Length: 334
Ligand code: ADP
Ligand code: MG
Image (cartoon, rainbow, N blue to C red; front, side, top):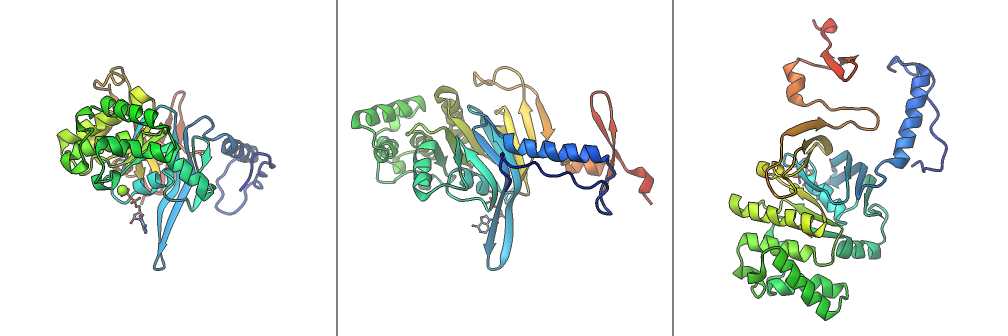
């Protein structure tokens, strides 16, 4: 690993290797220097930073690359949805960000904590105070023999908060999330949606910087899912917590400003919704889909677009005053 204080990489020799792209040597040298520069400043100021994150599972001699160099930046105060096919690496990502798992390579940093290099003690405190986590399975989030109020209070007891403050904050959280009527009920006496909202309140107990939710509405019907998602929005808007929510629900991504799509263990595209109304909980304006441009200049073109133009192996680029044109390589077609 190259630290920020070390020498920048030397430029490769001009025309190195038979397969090297034809480019002026000066350009290559500059690229190398820029890449090195970008490495030391990448993610500065972001609350969540994943830099070429890799997670390989090895079981029974079979390797699964769940994350294959994933880059992601999330600013403080954002509410971001993560979407992607089953098996694309969404849970692996949030488990790492939650401090439940560690990356095989690459970097993950949340609120200044380097998740690849934390002592067990720091990890515990990180999980207790910096992040809140909500599982898809409602039963994993709450203790079944405690009431909603007691569940929300529990993390604050571990954190050593005085009794009065605990009771006050727990009541406030239940109130903000519309759960005041559930305070004295155990999970069995609540609906699935109420349980998940109580789980959100519990995750927020110690005022975490980040709230992570892995398909929190996956087991719920559409209407209930909407309530749970609204609770995440309330937490984001009224308590200022940064929210990262994994979802399968297209209706959810229609309601957030930013949706990041993960494919094969990498961020593949992003949809940003512009326009007013989102802050007040109304409908957001039109959506624009963006492809990710990595620091080496790589762009992944959506499969539909590639297929529609019969693109294969290589494409021709044309620099225009305000955009870059990508053309199929007709010359070499049989
Ligand atoms: P998603 O949440 O997007 O459905 P996951 O992050 O759960 O995807 O899984 C990504 C890939 O890693 C999948 O191929 C999955 O089978 C594999 N995987 C996840 N967890 C483990 C594990 N503990 N051991 C081995 N492979 C795993
Ligand atoms: Mg998952």
